[in-house]
Image 1: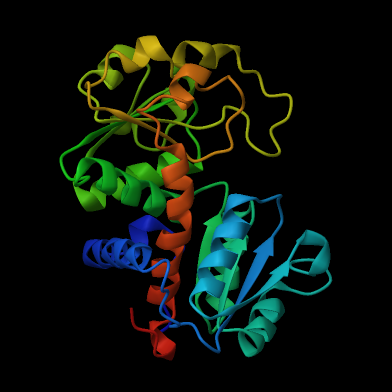
Image 2: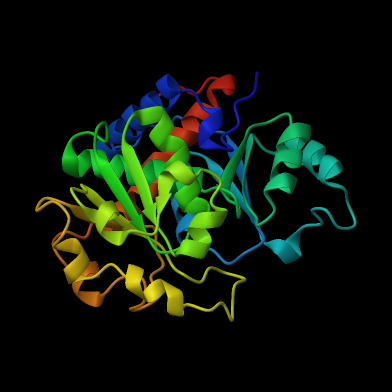
Length: 294
């Protein structure tokens, strides 16, 4: 049976822990990477601009001996002249796995349904599971474990927020998102959101935010988000040992102040690096069916 990596809530806890364990192991081997992907190819498909997702997957695949084929929106006929079903079936004959970053989550799931090879969610408007695995890996490096920790999110409720919610149910940590009242009212699960900034930050081990305006949201009003900016005043209310994470890119200096982004508490570039190693482990999990072992 093929192994996709689409949504965190579809992966069992034991598997998520094993992927994280392998990510740490593969990072330890980054200067002598095992060639476990030798002879294998990954198609990387994008309908949006990408820096970290493209580079991290490409480096991950190539460091471990594999190959990549990159296709931007204008390079493919996905859902256009050719159906998603046909595209999935053709690509399944060419490569060993597909990583796709696209807005429409439903289309991604349709692609996975018709592909006979693994499909990895590089990001959709609904979820960002690979990013969350890198975030978790970073938290484990800095704090020892994510279990029992309090992670507090500030700003908008987006695909990264949703993936944190999903992961908290698997790895036994507390997650709370502090967002404006109108956004809290529309959140999928009200038990994970609040508009009370102080309640969210109190006793927090990890402070997280993301851009208030994502790709394709030009013109979005941001005034209501300013009270939720991560700054020195907010960080001072968290634990003394609290760290700050952000999946990048940062809108300077909106969702986080320059002082915090460049502080000793900030682990944003550790997290960015860990995209490579987390994705090595995700790829290895997905490619177990063709004999890959970490």
